Image (cartoon, rainbow, N blue to C red; front, side, top):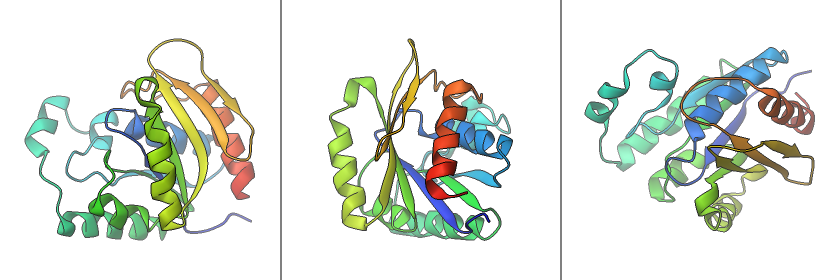
Length: 187
């Protein structure tokens, strides 16, 4: 039986690859038979529609705006409403810890922390952030542009993800991560 209303938020510093991971992980889960969907929760600086190719990157700068409480409430509502349509929703969250990101993240059941290899010290801040919200961190991942990726089965899944360059792709590492998440959440 597949659990309903699973909302996984991906948090971490800006430009870590959160949007690409959300899209790739949702594709990998779908390939494993899980009804998963990635949703853009960073409404001030949307990414997923560009990763998916429905809009060009030159349009992204035009769409950027300042975060405010109303925009955060809208993102939180989108997160909840999307989970009524899909068994698993993976949310690409804003890249800063703030009241707005708190409004969004508190709607999550689970979190994935993703940091670039040059800002791994941020992992501790994001762990504290999710702990205060009582959102269970299921994976801590580091992204890098080159090298080898891997996934480790631990109490909290550990991963090194390579090439999260805003190009959707499902590789062996993403499938391994999806398999562990599927197993861990009983999907």
